[in-house]
Image (cartoon, rainbow, N blue to C red):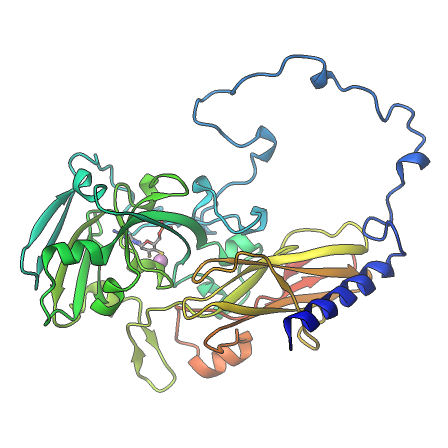
Amino acid sequence: MSDKKEVSQRRKFLQKSLTVGGGIGGILASKNALSQTNDSNFLAIDPWTKVQGSTFINPPYGLPSKYEKNVVRVLPSPPPTFLTGSRTPLQNLHGIITPNGLVFERHHAGIPDINPDEHRLVIHGLVDRPMIFTMEDIVRFPSESRVYFLECSGNSAAELKKATGKTAQEIHGLLSCCEWTGVRLSTILQECGVQPSAKWALAEGADGAAMTRSIPMSKMMDDALLVYAQNGEMLRAEQGYPLRLFLPGYEGNMSIKWLRRIKLGTEPWQTREETSAYTDLLPTGKAEQFTFAMDVKSVITQPSGMMKLKSKGFYEVSGFAWSGKGMIKRVEVSTDGGTSWAQAVLQEPVMDKSLVRFRFPWMWDGAPAMLMSRAIDSSGAVQPSMGSLLKEKGTNFFYHNNAIQPWHVAANGEITNGR
Ligand SMILES: Nc1nc2c(c(=O)[nH]1)N[C@H]1C(S)=C(S)[C@@H](COP(=O)(O)O)O[C@H]1N2
Ligand SMILES: [Mo]
């Protein structure tokens, strides 16, 4: 379909859905126009308009409005005995950027306290000049800023067996999107002189877990970043301060935080994290290993689980789409549980390996409904239903659940997990 035709079809759809509520004022049809209200006081000056406002309210590093105090990260439920991470409140986000204080955390042995003056990055193995870099050395290299999503490969895993989560945050909140700033890893590797026989790199964290993963050199020389800043400020401690590896589109666990060492070699190291974990047992009895890139996926965040539609009428259905394997090409939305699909609008900019915001106008008629979104990427991959995913991968896999998330809307407006 040509772009023009698509736009005109979308417009027609929007016009049609907006007129269901009745012409002008269709979006908030149940609301009284100002002229019809009996409140003679509607333009009275409020007390806060009559006094001098405060300058910043402590502390000097600004905080969200006190009325937004419920927009916070949550722990997995039930809470684990040892704190392993927290989840992003996807349903409260706008646009595509996750504010730093809401970025999910996942750590295997807690957050180390690292003084950047004492931190070192060692590069050794198959290089001509093994080197030790301080943070001062690293920030002297040419830098880049890029927007990327980061998803834990175990995101949404509990849902594979049965519906467990209630909200978008609980089910899919091991997901974030930031502007990451750092140095291209290839720049620093070239400084050390990569030997032609180097095919794999080992990245190691300085935390108690000493998280280690093997990464193909092709990725390390392509778009891998040595990151020291996120969303305009230095990394948060929980995101790997003062230095992390960032592998765009790849499983979150491979973006090693608190990065202290990169070793180049000829083969993968078969570390604990790539043998006992981050592998998937398939129906054939074989285990799938090194499944690096995250699959095409989307989720409706507004409205979503535990929200309540107060009255019938217009709603903007909106959410995130992303893929580690290509650009997001299209997102389709169904309001009837997958019987029919219509195309959503993608908010510009649509960036490679970033979250993409989609929007879809919906006129709710007050009857039970099932909201779903399905993303399609430039590799041609289509986000699967849970049924077809389980059929393909069996019931013994754990990582890379990219199934469609259904949200059930009851006649009273209550929204629940439709898994
Ligand atoms: N050193 C180290 N790096 C790590 C981890 C860790 O425990 N230690 N956790 C990994 C996992 S499983 C994920 S999903 C991401 C999470 O990144 P975030 O906490 O910045 O969201 O970091 C990865 N890098
Ligand atoms: Mo993870």
